[in-house]
Length: 392
Image (cartoon, rainbow, N blue to C red; front, side, top):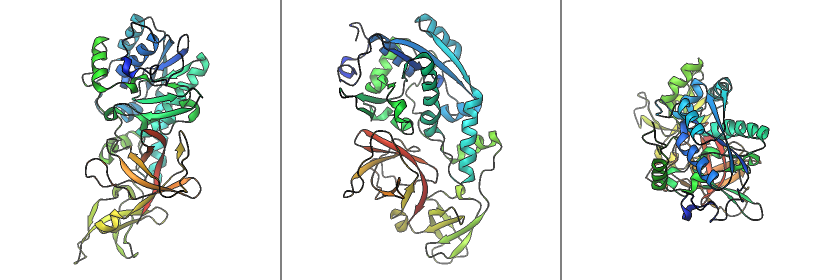
C-alpha cells in the first residue's frame, strides 16, 4: 500500500492478509450510479494500493433503476461521474444495458407472479445480473473485478476465498452477492467492506464525493414490499395475482376464497365473518399446486417451517446431516434482523428451515413465497436461496 494512502491502516485488507498484492494488477471497478460514492471510494483505495484501475458505468433501464435504487434516489448524474473519472485520470467505459436490465427484471416479475410468488428482484439483481455483466466486460479487458459493495472478500495464502459480512454490520451488503457464482467472487475485490460508517463518511468528504448524495449510507438493500410492487408490475403490464382459490384450515376444511396467493402473505390475519367462533385466522402457508391459502392459529404459525429452492453455495456446503447446527438466516426483506435457524437437506439440494426466532427486535419469522434469504455461519456467507413452500 502506498505510504500516503488515505485508507485506514487498521482496516487495511493488506494488513489483514486478505488481499493479494495489488501492485500492477489490473482491476475493473463498476461505478453504479446508485452507489457512485462507495464505488468511487473503492477505486481510490485500490489505486492507492498500486492497482491499475479502469472504470465501467452501466446504464440501466427505467424498471431496473426503480428496482435497484427505489423511487427517488438522490445520486450523482452520469456527467458528474464522467467528470470525476477525467479529473482522476481514470479510463471510464460507459455501457448501455437499458434493454438488457429491464428485460431481466420483466422476466423475473413474470416468472414469479406466474408462480404466485413475491417477485423479490432486488436481492437477485446484483448477483445474477450486474456481477456477470461486470465479469463479461472484465474478460475483454483482462481485468479482475471490484465494486463498492459493503462486504468483504478474504483470500488466504493457500488461495481459499471467503465472502464475509462487512466489518460494520449496519451497512452490510453481503446478501446482495449471495446468488453470485463462485467464479465471479474469486475475481472480486471489496475494499469498502473493511470500513466503519464514520470512516466512510469522513473519507467521502475528504475526497469530495458528496456532490449530490446527502445520505450516502442509506440502506438500499431492503427488498421492496408488496405495495411498492404495484407500480413495478404496472410498468410491465403483467397481472398481479393468480386466479382465485380456496382458503382452508389445517384440517383441510374450506373456509372461504382468496383472490390470489400473493394477496395473502404468511402471518397476515384474515377474518371470516361466517365463523362465529374464532373468526380471525392467520395465514400459515400455501399449497401452490392446489391454489390454497392455509390458515390457522398464532401457535401453529410459530411452529411453521419452510422449504427453499436449491441453495447457491457461495463458499462451502455445510454438513447438515450432523446434529442440528444452528445457522443465521437473513431475509432480503429484513436485512437488519438475523434469525437463528435449524436447516436440514431436503430433496437433495433444497433446505427445510425450522426453529426460526429473531435475534434482533422481537420480530416473528414471516417468509413470503418467492422471498430470498442468505445463510451465515457467524460472519461467513454460505449462500442464498428462495422460499418455495411453507407449511406447519
